Image 1: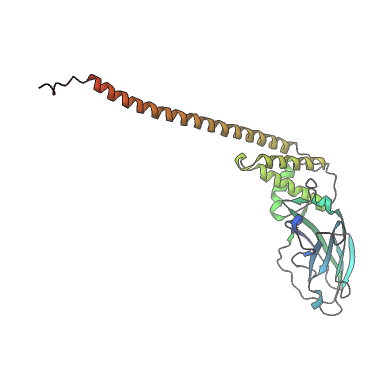
Image 2: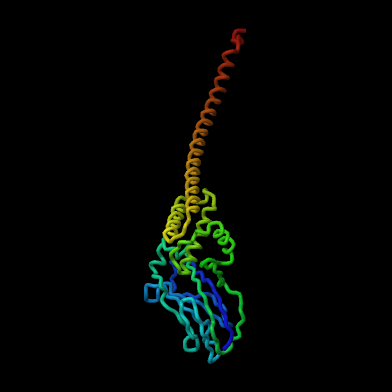
Length: 284
């Protein structure tokens, strides 16, 4: 019956809201010496819900009689084979909710889908080796699926602020991961200088923070950072306005100085002429 194998992957769909294609698929990845890919209908496939499915990549080229019994993160367990190389279902998330700005599903226009694929049994050997893929494996930290690059930062964050997600209401792994990505994006945003941020950026950060707070995150410390940044932005704008005023005043003063210098030179010439003795050259 072949080897048991399991892998957790994250598929990032960029520019999800503006996708025009009816069907998109991830890059292939290997689990249980079989090549797979995730596919989605970003427009819903005739329904108003995100439609996701898992399929065997290049299944038409596989040898006769192959079968794989697979449990995957859509809470399904199915046999994949020649007659049924793909399985999927309508996601529980309505498209209008996914596209809603305050929902937290989309971060910088990207939708991240976290999936866990477990090959339970295999019939027919498919000699495909494990290989590197653009699909990134994630790790579970306190119920959040994290990329390796996020692990150190989130671990330090949870160590410093262990209460962050103690009251978070959603148990859905995709939502939890989306919220954590949003939190990291907010932190990265507020680490920029005030000069690099606009008031619109700060307003959007405040809206995102409100969304996370409503979801149960405890982010008083981040709210203070946002308030501090907003105050610094106000001071920066006020300071820049005052600098422009002083520069204009200095420009006017410089012009006045230039005019006074010209008047002074003229007055000196007139004074010099007034001090000169009267000439008698025309007499003698």
